[in-house]
Image (cartoon, rainbow, N blue to C red; front, side, top):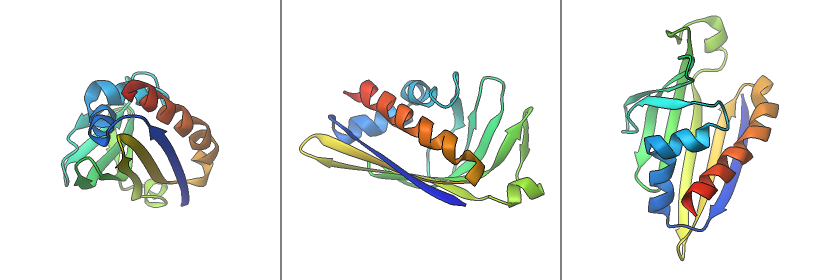
Length: 144
């Protein structure tokens, strides 16, 4: 697994950043940089199942490993969803799952920093290196 790190400074309080990042409308806006029409189904509560899906229904099946409101959230990706079917058991999935996507938010004088750490298969590195900065810039524009 490859580990990548991204961060951005946003001129907004961390509660606003957190809310915009995870609320359905805000999430769909910044996640559209990964795939137009992306959304989630489920809950951000610790232990809850959550699916990250495209308009076609393909995506990732995951659970929320940790949720410390306004500070930290950890997503444990368990597998893919293809044609509406979840795969958490195939050799392809077992080669990388679980993989974590972690967000930490800190604030200083009304300015927040969002740090993102992700674990990915090496074949996704170039795409993620190109797309994450765009997604975080979009989140920044939503919050400021």
